[in-house]
Length: 383
Image (cartoon, rainbow, N blue to C red; front, side, top):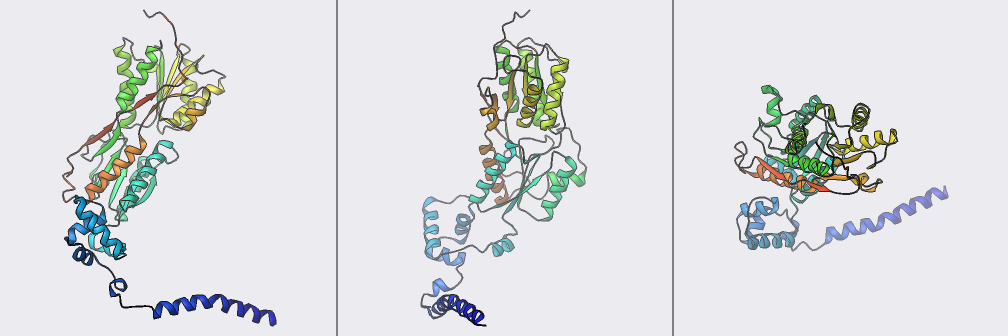
């Protein structure tokens, strides 16, 4: 009984400071009514001497505002301790301050880096991000889009799994080019008018193939995955580099997968090496395929670059620490994710979404070849 009473007293003692604080707040100075009422955009506009529309643009992070006006607004916001009411804003603007991101496989370092950049850029502009993973499955992708539409999000950023020659029925097309502003990344659908932010895949593949040719290689295997515009453009760049150097592209050196997985990379590499013993170099077109390629080369007890020269696409940590370090084509994932997010939010705040108010169709960044130690010179006489 004594211990129960002691515990009760201890609980009361712990609660006393909280009760006292509550009493202090209740008895506190209420003379400053400006701090005790709910501050509105109208209050800020009046005190800053600007329009409510200007205050909205500053707080919302959209549109153009002079630096002087922005400074005034932010000063008053700080003075009045203004905190935006996200629920009220959502009801008034019919916006949720949320964007959806749809990617093929989040486990792919390329996509995870882009998603991270999108989250950072979105947060700076006051937006939350919902991430959907399609596993490179078109049916799953459509379901992801339907779910995002049902949540009435403000915009979508998507790396589509669809091939460039896909024919969409009207019911499906409205989710790829519908009422919700959409920006495509990495992969584009030529039959849609939406903005696409991507890398120059053709040029990147051309330069990597040309580099191998300059080192004396003619029989160059290439492994691709996913039937997307991205992979098609890389294959085209590879073929053009060969033809520009009087080398006829041969289908026996090309393997095209469905999901660009590590396992596909492993199978394709083994198949190419077993069936093409005259092949001296390989080019893997994403980092998952690179990992599979390395596994197959290790399984076959081959040495890089003595037995086989290799180049990969999408630089990642493994490429830098393996022995020897791999020559890779790299893309600016941070820039792709950041620009896609900023452009999407510009479109969201535009009054003319359907006609693409930004007037842009494609934003293309350069690919870069990082030369390391995975390619050897092959001295042969070309006929």
